Structures are given as structure tokens and as C-alpha cells.
Amino acid sequence: MKVLVIGSGGREHALAWKISQSSHVKELYCAPGNGGTSSIAKNISIKDSDIKGLLDFALKEKIDLTVVGPELPLVLGIVDEFEKNGLKIFGPRKNAAELEGSKIFAKQFMWRHKIPTAHSRIVESPDQAREILATPEFSYPLVIKADGLAGGKGAIICKSPKKAEETIKALMIEKKLGDAGNRVLIEEYLEGKEASFIVLTDGVKMLPLVTTMDHKAIYDGDAGPNTGGMGAISPSPFIGKEIFNDVIKSIVFRTITRMLEEGRKYKGVLYVGLMLTDRGPRVLEFNCRFGDPEIQPQVLRMKTDLVEILMAVVEENILQKEIEWSQNAAGCVVLASGGYPVKYETGKKIEGLNDALEIPGITIFHAGTRMEGEEYFTAGGRVLNVCAAEKTLKKTMDKIYDAISKIYFETMHYRRDIGAIK
Ligand code: AMP
Ligand code: GLY
Image (cartoon, rainbow, N blue to C red):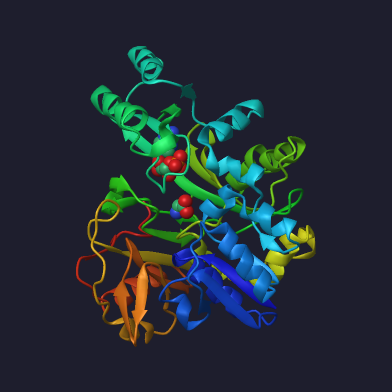
């Protein structure tokens, strides 16, 4: 088979790494890929938003399966375009990807179907926002959410009325996030542990992946602004059997069946971002793709051939395929460029990768890296994902941090408390 992976992050390197191990795969391409994918696949320089370019390439090369990593091409409708042209592609169609593409659509969907989520109000204008904020309906902190893709910057936690006012101005008047600020959500702030609950679905049936926990804030102790994710572990220490079953029944299954009933058959990955509150699990967001960095520890635990699983989803035959997992505890720590998630420099030489990789059991997935000759340079905010999967979480994390001590690039920053459970 010829397989094409779309995207350029740590998630896509992890997917390509697992796909490259499949006995079904003869040729593997990544568009555009990164420094890490270039050693296991052929990188093609087509951007993930260039749907026409990707389609032309897939048709010309007769790609048998395309796997979409990031949300942008899904929200733009890449699946519809590929399917129209008779190509097999893994991911939800445009009208289903709206669950991630529009926070307001997702919120109204949850209201329609009584899916537990934070209390919130849709706001159409700055004046309406001020009116709502002047009443006691929401207390502080509260969350203001832009209605569209914002690369992880669309949910702003406001601890004071001043911050809320500034946020409304930045989103709705100054349009700092473009059209995503035309309408916004004002939302109750939920306390609890966050969990990423990720399933595969063929639109009717589903197959849960092993649970994970992301660490979103930039600094240790969950301090500082949110990022795309600074590290993840699997399994999540906070999802026991009872919560697992509750989430499947009251959230995941209901979402899949109601989407089908609404004529938006949901095929692909359904990622439910949850807050585990003392009133039960509440949905913070839906994503229509694998988590980054959640998929990194997940692929390390996955024993089954990923291509067979993805094909079962595409061919709507999911129950034919059980996923086998290792019982190990997997972890991933992200090495980022200093200044991320705001402003950062790139082009720094990365040293010590080979020394780190000499430690048995260490896997490194690249994110923002670029290969030049035999050397790697930084090329993004999140740069590397150092991963392992050992019998206990402690062994896993000790090994990862040992490997990290061998890696260096100017401005390198990472969290030292990934997997430290409080
Ligand atoms: P979202 O883009 O909606 O997933 O939000 C990104 C991050 O903001 C989440 O992963 C949470 O850490 C935080 N967040 C979003 N909504 C809420 C909420 N209602 N209460 C507390 N934290 C939230
Ligand atoms: N790690 C969070 C996400 O993939 O959305």
C-alpha cells in the first residue's frame, strides 16, 4: 500500500512511525512532514491547507490511504474532496468536523442532546458581552472562547472583570483571532482534573483508545498560559472504570449516534476534552483528530497494526478489529523553544539526539525540526517529544528525563513535572 500522512508535528511523526511498521505499507509519504519523518518517509512539500495540491498528489501517486493529522484540512473539507475522487481517507467530513471547527456549533449540539458541559452563553456583540458580564450569571474566573480554529489560543481564562473586558475587546473589536471573534462563548470555569478521552468511530460503532492525560500549561505546576500540550502520559491516572463507562455512555456514544441522526455521520477520531469535576465529567471541547502529544504515548502502547485499524474505520467495519495494548505506562515530554507559546526563535542547532537515543527504550518524535545534512535544527515552538513506555510510570519518566539531560538546543524549555500525579 501507498500511505500519505498529512501534517508536520509530533503527532504526525508518531503516526508515520507506527504506520511505517505495518506489513501492508510499501511506500510512505508525509506532507509536509518534519525532520523526523524524513528518515522514515518521503517528505512532500505541500502545506496541510492546500487541499487541491494534496488531492492532485494523491491522485497522481495513486495513494491507497491518506491519514489526516491536524484539524485544519478536516475543517476545510479534505475528506469530502478525496472521497468525491474515489480516494480512501481517514477523518471526518466537513459537516462532522464542525464539532471542532465551531465551538458554538458544538455547544448547541451538546445543549440539544443533553451532553454534560460547562454552562455558557453565546455572545453576538461586545455590548451583549458587557451586559452579561454585568450580571451575576458568571463568577470569576470565567472562560471566553472564540468560535473557530485558533491553534490552542481560543480559550481565554479571565480571572477579573478587567481581563474579561480586555478579552472581549481583543476578540470582538480588534479581531485578534480574525473571524473566530465574530461570536464568542462566555463560559463557567470548571475545576477538576483534565483528561483526553479519545475514540475511533466508523460513524456507528466505536473503539476507545487507551486513556491519556495531557499537561497543557507551559510551566510546572500547571502555571502560565496554555499550550498545545507540553507532555502526556497513558493511562490517565484519573479515569477509573466507573468514569470510563459513564463517559462512553453519557458523552461519546450519545455524540456519535446524535451526529448520525443529524445527518453528520462522524467517522475518524473523536477526541473529547474533559474536565473531571465533582459533579461528574463535563465536556470542555471536541477535537476531530488525534491529540498532540496524546497520540505519542498511545502509539508506544499500541501492539496492533495501525493501518489495519484505520482501514477498518474508513471501510466502516470497526468491530472486526480489536486493538491490543501493552500494559506499560507510557510518557512523552515536549522540548519547546523558549518563549513558546507566544514568541520564539527558530534555527537553533539540536545536539545530543544520538546520545539520548542510545538509551534502550527511548523513542523521540520530532515536531518543529528541520534536517540539514546530518544535523537537525529547531523549526517550531514544540521541537521534540521524548518518549518511553516502561512497567511503571516512575521508571518511564526517570528514563525520559535521563534522555532529556543529554539533549541541548539554545533556549530549550520543558516541564519537569510531567507524570507527577497530585
Ligand atoms: P478548549 O479550546 O475549549 O479545549 O480549551 C482549552 C483549554 O482551556 C482546556 O484544555 C482547559 O485547560 C481550558 N478550559 C477550557 N474551557 C474551560 C472551562 N470551562 N473551565 C476550565 N478550563 C477550561
Ligand atoms: N494536546 C491537546 C490537543 O491535541 O488538542
